[in-house]
Length: 456
Ligand code: PFF
Image (cartoon, rainbow, N blue to C red; front, side, top):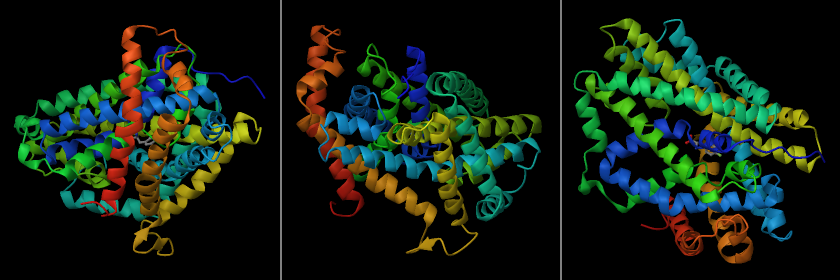
């Protein structure tokens, strides 16, 4: 087999992995959840979930990936000595694979919206935006083509390898994304009545705090950090012996959380300024926000034009960096398990996920054949991966690392073979192990049981 090339720099590690974490989830779910569920109080709970549960789970995946120096399936297999634990790795790969197709559909819509903003189509009444999105998502041709374009772009980047493809692209895309975000935040916060939106996002309201909110914060933090989909494990297999796993996980989590909070500052001031009630999910970004931007900046149409255009470029970049990481999970798997060239492996993944994506897209209105049990295929993928596979893989990974892998091996990875020697790391390792052994699996089990109504 050819020598594996890893990330070339620390910055590359952070930006590529943060690129996986920063995605549509930061923009379409976090801000709304924060606003609806107690503002600053929710944000504090969310950050606590990231710190106490998200970061330890991320480190665990890093440990499996870097130890294995191979795709996720083989990495679990190596660390488990070929025992049935390897199935968790296969499940991680399968989760990543299944998500790739439907995530590509949504990022494909972003491309259509870039085009629509560019040619000045994103202007009109609120109803116009509703119809525009309904027509696009149920169209049998356009969204399928945009899905192919998005996967094609991911292919071109992935095919160039980890250092020349993923790392280089992330180093360009992540700073651009951040600059665009700041531009729109400033524009949004300068609107009249912007303060009300800022208040909605940050005003602490203890009365909204329920067990449900806590569990939603936990679920969102896992999704947002790309936990349990094979991505973190695959990327970690490209880390060097010197990559400090704890520092990297913390930096990535900070970037992800800052982007989520900034996304709130981009959305709410503009929405409140024109008196529109924000919501979440695809309707927020494809119906509500284009309407908000067109109204809010209506007095100076050119500003509205650019804000809307830049917003969809930003979303496409956020989506693309996450899509790349998902694509890489399966590409590395095919490349290493079937001894294929990177090009061939990437092509197989692109074509097969394009087929899945096309079916997901068609299930949203073009045909009824792809709707089962009242749910479109698109929603089935979302449900099975996000609500079943994600908690199962996350839970089993914690049990695996916490209870089955010899602590000596875990400690070696955690402390970079004893080179991170201070007292501080010894203490940190004990805290990490305690969280991974007891707290993380219990918390994940709670979310899982709760979402199926088995725990009230
Ligand atoms: N973390 C991404 C987001 O917040 O949109 C979504 C995601 C990407 C989840 C990659 C999982 C993954 F493996």
